[in-house]
Length: 318
Image 1 (cartoon, one colour):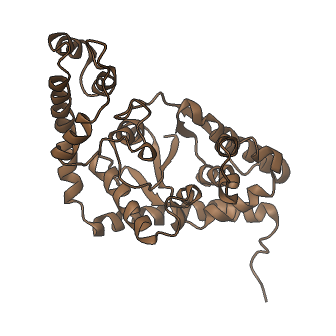
Image 2 (image 1 turned 90 degrees about the vertical axis):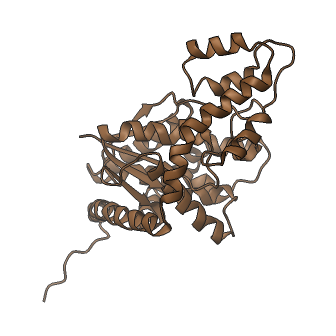
């Protein structure tokens, strides 16, 4: 089986956009590959929203892994691990940073976007591509699922592998991207659903919380079909059946939102129950076992890297 690696940052309360954009695609695909699922906690530090808040970091880590399990990802079929528990990630990132130029890293979209907005980018965000390259290359990854706008991450990893292999001999496998046209779920204001916009529908929220969010969806009073409501709803019910419902309730936005609430609840309720039943101890066991498996693979790769670099002096003999 080819090896697949993907990751998700611990970034607070999950919403239905996270489910359709990341959790569901991985749950659907992981059985087809030897799958590694990384909890990217060190990457999350570059954004600032988890910095200097250790309690929030710890809770977010537990919540994201619990969500993996609640949506049906089997830790017996996927290695679920915590990035910070595998020290080889940061070690290899440093080595790769020494192989690439500043001008190369300045091309990264995340860095350029932040600078273009007049925001101060921290050094972690600037070096982010090489930590991501290390994440990928440590595990001889064949496939990295990414959205169309994330292709550059894999290109950076491939370039880093080629630079190292050219300088020190064949060591790293060159990964390929698996472009996923994962669903982009609009939020309650019509923009992309995002915690930073405050426009989310919680993935594991109560029915009342879901209803409150859905009822806040901005509607266009000029048409017969509320487009923002429909854009979310089409991910929960086939569009032919949805068309009948919207034709029957033309102009009755309240009724259409109530149907959407029921459809979201039908999907969310079983996952919400599973999520509530998973203890912190179970999550910690999954991460401990998965991180141990990941360290075995990463440690073997770093032994090869150190030998290639010449920093490993071998066994001392008498």
